Image (cartoon, helix red, strand yellow):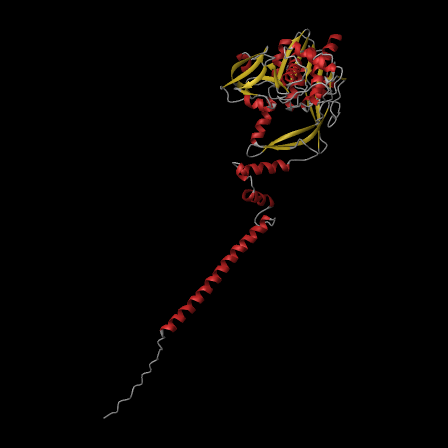
Length: 496
């Protein structure tokens, strides 16, 4: 019988831990897991700290490689600027600021960038083709006196007259407002109504005016044997407007062209207006470009008012640009033309507008203009043939006069000085004009109060001061005899 082999089975013995040993094992596992979590937290936190550090570096001027300076600055402003939420479209605003900065030069104040809105406002100011009521007013120390009501304008149709004083617009007082503020209150959508409160003959009345399109850069009138032609700006319609007025005055031979406060406009407009008085084939101006090329602008064929044999041009320190071109063109090209008043502004360079994709423009100084004879007036202006200054009051800075302000005998004030100069302009006997309240000024002040039915007292108070300034404004606007420059021009024409 065969012997059976003995099979050996090896069994691994495993110790069963006691209860105390099992608890020790669990604690060790928990410790290892805690260490793992701590390491993970440090790693993640390190990433966060690293990211924050990078952001901190960027915020202090370190630019990411993918951004140029312009884009980076915009991002920083968009992310961190305290006032970013004040702008509905911050990106567009920053773009416009950047373009404006790119075209800003200390030595060339005329090269500039204009956004679409700025461009519209700029061309509207030249063409004066706004939607409004059609008046021109003179603002002096809160007194807005209407000096012109243009023919066919909404204001004329509604019954507003030259000399009316604007007191309020839609029930809101104009006191303290600038000229632009008043304008913005008056203009609006075509066909809408605006209530203009005016003071006429000491009585206030409300006049409802329906706003409409106003095109008027020119105003003219005839006095005695001469014509006064005011050109406020050289816009797209200026030449046609001049023709419209002067067609009624072809039997006159004496002309006063008032260019005071005319800041210029389009080259084509001044070319057209010059042609009306010079005839065809006369030089209006020369332009010299950076490469030395000279371009000559000549008058154009068309209407020619040869009847005006004597021309006097009125100028002041705000006569500029295209207005100065006309002055030089007529002085050098007309047989009998002189300038009178004050030295002009002195803008002797030309800007060319270049339109950009979004409708905005960049105006770039491209040439210097010269008179027909080649004379430059840039930064010098045109000295008048006959210099005539206005009264000193018109060169004073307007000062606020509060309702509770009162000045009495033996006091000194700039407001007293303004009152003294104003009364002197109005024809009162004012012995001193230095701002000192003496007995002579008191006597003059009492005389003015009596003439204007004011409360008689020994004080320069709010009501008296306002009445004095108002009288100055009205007098200058409506009394041609109170304009020494215009008076001198009329005197010279009558002498001829």
